[in-house]
Image (cartoon, rainbow, N blue to C red; front, side, top):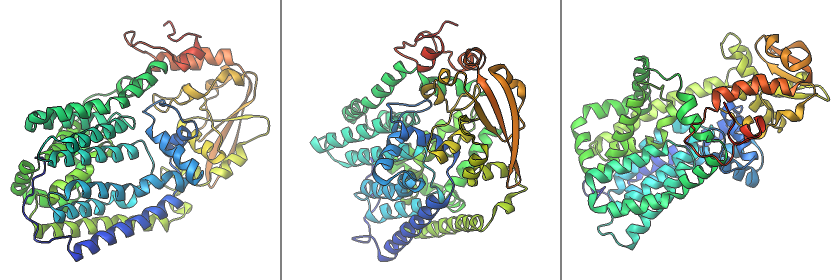
Length: 516
């Protein structure tokens, strides 16, 4: 089995002190997350994903659709507010803790409780309240692992076991509809069954079959939308990827931070116990080792984002809980609590600051844009004009404040190309457009596309903002100059990929696949 009991628990249930630790960590961290979620300004990524929830679809420019569906659900049930769209990430640690407990308690109720506690004490579970594509990915991935773990605990391949394998596959399919990093979880399953559970390959086969609707939905969307997810994740975002020693070094530092100093020290000190635990808890070991190695190899070319590894994060603490001597788990929990407490103090300190405190910081303009969004829009808007941003971050934040989608003027970058799906610039032909920017605008970037261009500026809390007003928008010129550049850079779709549709191409050249 995947998770045989490591030793009989000396307690028939979770000890009272441990139960109090669990309750305290759950309640205190939940209250902090609720406070941050309700008061912290919306981030650029969140504002961008918000529009996915406003326009539900089977997919979006960068990623599969799950976070858009989730935001749409929250808007429909709890209203259109920051706290409502953030509620899933606020409640996520509690849901993951419940899934860990359900998965691990047959092996040892006491150690399962420690696994939940160690995970809940990780600092990120106290301060992370930003809704992203990783939120549903983490949720469905952990549910898939929990169902697989329960299936592996069954002595025979009976109906219940097959049902759990099927459920694990359904959850894996949902994870795929959240983000492509779910493929790493699938790879982990393949390694585990190939090395340790070949006699249960039938269970893996059922799991894969039940996961297939997720990729099928995504493939159908990509066929009709110019393979936007593939172009972003496989091609466009990796064009400049090259080896640098700093990248694997950064990955190592990041993982040391995520593991936390106390857990890392105890893992090194009791490495023999950790190795023994890995031998007895093979599924947990694979869920830790395979992703670690995958991202380590990837780090030689790419800077690994902290959020990339989060769908595997709980399993490291679970492996520790099932490996360390029981008397050392309390020491680990205390160390994690101190580390989390330091993060809470930092957050408290940040909330005691004012805008003036940050005036000399490099990110001060971005802070002002997020905190004073309404004032900026009031100064930049004019009746009878179309307001646009100069980047997806600013356009998304401004659009969220107005509750009106705001396009990006210019070619943009390889990510966040939702404009290609939603915006038909020909509808603005002849109109007056005002573009908000924090940088001194270069007029040559605007004059080819308007009859007349002028620049005005204003100051918001010490930060200069510029507004480029272009009268008589010339769509044919914009199509040739800006959209043509976007087509050349971001729509080099391989000829071997079949296509039934491409919204950008159909507007740009009137065909599903534009000639190059």
